[in-house]
Amino acid sequence: MWNGDELDLDAYLSRIGLGSGTGSDGTDVGARELRPDLDTLYAVHRAHTASIVFESLDVLFGRPVELDVKALEDKLVHGRRGGYCYEQNSLLAAALERIGFEVTGRGARNRTRGDTLLAVTHAVLVVTVDGEPWLCDAGFGYQGPREPVPLARPGHEVHQGQWTFRVREEAGGILVLSALRAGAWRDLYAFSPQRYHPVDYVVLNHYSSSHPSSSFVGRTLVQLPGDTVRQTLVGSELTRLHPDGRTERETVAAEDLIGLLDREFGLRLSDRDAAELVRIHRSRD
Image 1 (tube, rainbow, N blue to C red):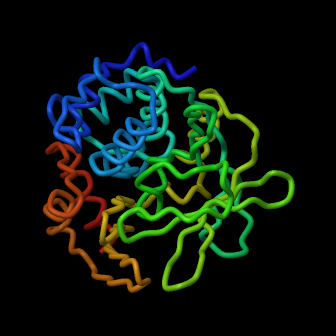
Image 2: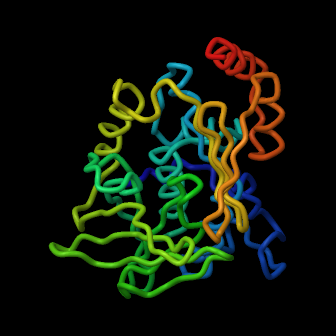
Image 3: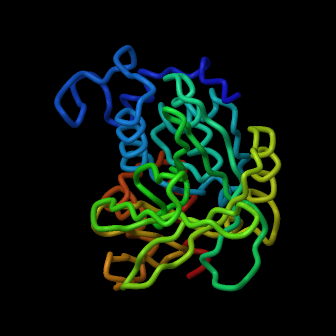
C-alpha cells in the first residue's frame, strides 16, 4: 500500500534519532530490532514528530510537492527538510509498513476554525496493533498529537507530556480528535471510517498545494509540537502556545527569519531557499 519496501529504513531511523543505541531505554532500536508492537509505534511516532518539522515552504516557493517514497526520502530524510501532512504521514506510513504494521489512511476535516465547514483536506493514519486501532498523525503541525491516540476507547483521555487529547465518537461513526486547553475541550479534526489510499492523498495534495483558496498557498507556515511549548510561524508572526492556553506572539523581521528557523524549529535551509524566503518576506514588508 505505502511502498515501504522502497524506503531506506535505517536512514529514516537515523533521521528521527532512533539509530543504534538511542532507544529510550538505552537499547539498540535499529531497523533489524524493531517489532510491530505498541512500544515501537510509540517510539517511532514520538521521534518523528520531534525531529521532522511541519512546513509547507515548497508550496510558498511554487514547487511541486511529490509524495512518492523516494522523493519523500530525498527531501525529509536526506535533505533534512520538513513537510506538511501528506508528506509527513506518507513517510510515516511507509516506515511503519516496512516495520510490519498494518497501516490505513483516513481523510479528516479540520475543525479548528469554529463552526466553519471545511473540506476534507487533512491526511491521518490508523495503525492496528494486536487488533486495536490507533490514530497516528505526524502532520497536524503544532496542535497535533506527539504520540498515538487509541480509537477503540472513545472519550479516554491520553496525556502526552503537559498536553491532553481524546477521541470521541459522533453519529454515523465519525471520530473527533480533541485537545484540552485552559480547561476546555477543543476539536481539532473529524474523520469517518472510510479508508483513504495514497492515490487519494495525491488529489488532496494537488488542491492544498495549488488552489488559490488553500491555506498553504502564498504564505510561510512552519510549526513544531514541543513537549512544553508549541510553536507556529505564520507569515512573519511567531506564536508560542502553552498547555494552560496562554499564547505569546512576536513579529519576526525578514533579516532574523533564517536564524529563527534554525534556532526554534531546527530547520536549516539551503542558501538558495534561504535567500528566496527572505526575498519573499522583504517584498511583503
